[in-house]
Length: 286
Image 1 (cartoon, rainbow, N blue to C red):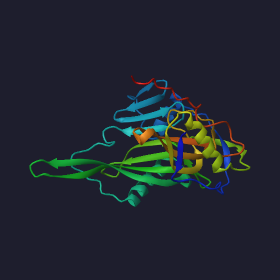
Image 2: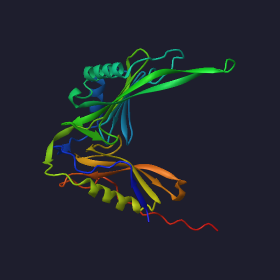
Image 3: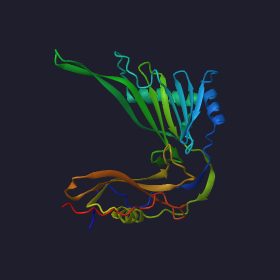
């Protein structure tokens, strides 16, 4: 019998007014990509456009702009400066200054509405310098990534989507960004009531017990709109309970971190998790 433990859980549905939003089609076309390039000042007669089943790419010199087919997500990188170490610079910058500069770039390039942005975290890319003879070393910061989380009517957007990450180099200039920010095209349905978090917990247990782990540990449980990642299609944006968990084998020799997402509205549209898979019995070793 699988043991289930909770480090964190929600006792009651949050007191939040939510909607189920219809999402616009991704619109990932060569024409849309060219318009993005023009808007970002990257238009060039020497630019090269390429496409594959996952994405469309516009390359103008060192500038690479990518548009993902499934989601409409956008990625930009200046490949001569994005997360590049010049061998000497050390970007000493506070979280407050980094987030302020990133927000200025977001506003200037109209990457997202400032009203929907909440600072998620500031991360730093460090490199180490060492002197073997002197037996000492030091670290330098060569890049800062400022991650913003999307909010809708004060409710956070959870999942791999609903994120905008802005990258700054040693000169505090924009070197790239990742934006997974699907456009809504209106309210598909109002949410009359939210399900209990206990329903989400029960669904999680039923789902993951089919994998036959020895133990399931839920170490975080959150509520918000759920948005998928770069390569995933999505038709609606709806509220959900998101549980972060670890699946552990006997004696915890093996463990795997994963997430379980349960639609929270009583009038939810479909399911969010893929069909559960049965564990495959392993033959005895002899």
